[in-house]
Structures are given as structure tokens and as C-alpha cells.
Length: 298
Picture (tube, rainbow, N blue to C red):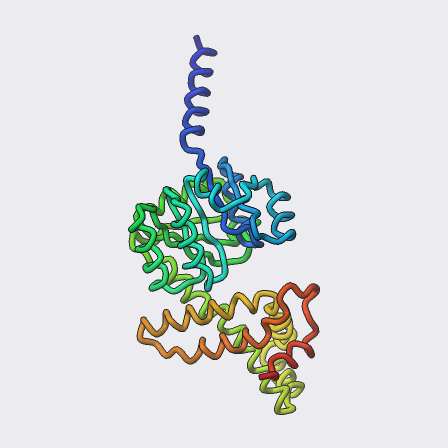
């Protein structure tokens, strides 16, 4: 009898797992997206992607981490109950429209670096087609270690998405039932973290142009030992993602405008990132001299 009860309990647990397992589609498995996918797989879900029009690098990354390829967005929308969108800010609305065109019926998480206004707009667009929308904001790098990357969620259906990552290492937190709150938090955080990196790049460019960069380094290091080297590392390493951060700065500018704050800070940051956006996919990171040259080229 005791053994039979154990078997019944085990069957109940397995049945519950089957009921809660979701089919999740990732658009798209870049460095961040594939880490989000890995957390969902680690939490017992089936995760899919669509290789149509994607690079060989993306294919290799997806295969390495166990994502199943459904080939096309049309098939992804047909099979998956949940779609998670992680793409450059400028592509967020277009991607949502493509999902609508393929008659997706399920839950859609926009985890892109977009303004609250854009999140609300996309949410209304999807909601009009009976798609459940969840607003998301990611803070941190790719989610490979616990307590390193947070997915903040807002919206009435946010708990469904939080459950998809129950085993981590991605951390999730629901902050509101109101669409736009997760994006607002992301924008305010990135305004500082990525905005200050752009500012430091601009400072280096100005100091180089004016012929006082070495003197600036000396005084920085008097204030804080090793600070000049930290700045150099930030300026060279950010180049790989500058093409993406340009759009993010524009979204932050729109967010500040809606909040009644000056927009000039992040309009300028967008221009800084635009000037160094040509280093996309450059490995290893470029030399500082090359970055300075790009910054000073109008």
C-alpha cells in the first residue's frame, strides 16, 4: 500500500508537470535571447526558434543550447503558446505586427528596451487581436549565473511568464499589473548605466581632440586609482553593441520627454553610439585609438 501511494503521488507530480509545461518561442536567440531560452528549458519547458532569415552564428548558438528549430515564424506562431521577443528596439513593433499577421493566439512577452509608450502601443495592438501581452524589462547581461540578470514584468498575465523561469538562473520579478511599468524601470536603469558609458566615450573624444587626454588620465587616477583604465575598457567593449544601444538611447529620450525631463542627454548619447556603431561583430574589441578616431569622425 505504501509503495502504491508513492507511485500515485509520483504520477500526480508528473501529470502536474505535463499540465504546466509550455511551448515557448524565442524571437530571437541572440546572446541575451538564448540565455533566456536556456532558463526556460532549465525550468522544464520546450523552447523553439525559427531559423528563417537568421545567421549561421544564430543557428549555431540555438543548436548549442537545445532550442528546437521550427524553421519559419508562421510555424512558430502555430505551435507555441508563448512568444518571447528580444530584438533591437527599432524592430519591436515590426516583429509584433509579423506575429499578428501569422494569426498567433497566446501570450506575448516584449522584453525589448523600449519606452513605456511604445510598450503600451504594442500591447494595445496585440490585445486587439486577443493576444495576451506582457511588458518586460531585462536588467543585466546574458543570464548564465544566478542573481546576475533580472527580468522585470508588468501586466495582468505577468505571473504566467514568471513561472516559465522558476528554476533560473534568470531572476524574475512582477512589479505591476500595469503595462509600461517594466519598460519604465528598464529605461531609467539604462539611462544611467549605458548613458554614463556614452558620456565617458564623449569625454575621451573631447579630451583627445583638445590634446589633454593623458593629463585627464593622470587626474582621474589621482581621484581614483585605475579609473582611467576602467574608462578605456568601457569605451572599447561597448563598441560591439553600440549599434543596438543607439536605438535604446532614443527610446530613453522618448521616455524622458513623456516624464517631463530634458531629452538632450540621451539624444547626444545616441549620436555617440552611432559614431562607433561600425564596430559591430568586431572581435576582439578594437583598440582605443580606433574608437577615438570613430568618435571624432562626423
